[in-house]
Length: 201
Image 1 (cartoon, rainbow, N blue to C red):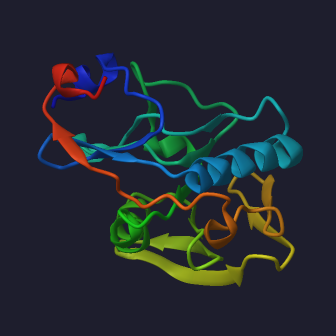
Image 2 (tube, helix red, strand yellow; image 1 turned 180 degrees about the vertical axis):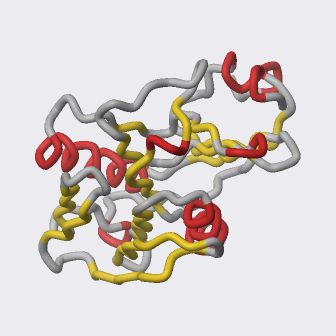
Image 3 (cartoon, rainbow, N blue to C red; image 1 turned 45 degrees about the vertical axis):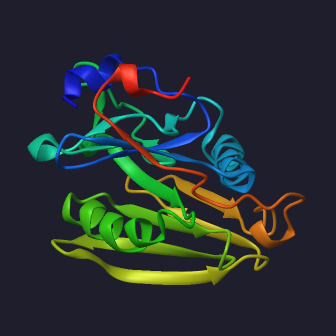
């Protein structure tokens, strides 16, 4: 699926959108806890960065070499501007991915390497299953040189941003997959599609 086709496609709500290097797009259903975790980060950004802060969730970002990403949560520079239809990786200050059973290897390994290689200053992995977060800083050509792990329920985690602001996430307020009222098994299904006509209705 081409970049232009992706830009013109309206993806259904409730799915994580993964972009493959072969041009394919994979949709994986999210759990209620996954969505609630993203919402917690959005609320935290409003409290610590201001309601007008440029934050994105599941929005297409351009990376070099035709690579794309639609992270669960991202903080951009205040002066970030679109390059064509999308924001570019150079304006990204922080990216966070929320782990699901379908995305664990990607979130912990593939994304760590990718975001570090492209110089994203802060990469935060939030894992509702392990009940912990991993804060990656100091990007390198193969990932990040520094990683700090904090458990849920251990207070506030401060992530300094490259522009001098600080994104603070309250780990006491993150939803816990094991305590969810209803346990969702992920993925219910995963679909790979070539164009808008293959999207679920």
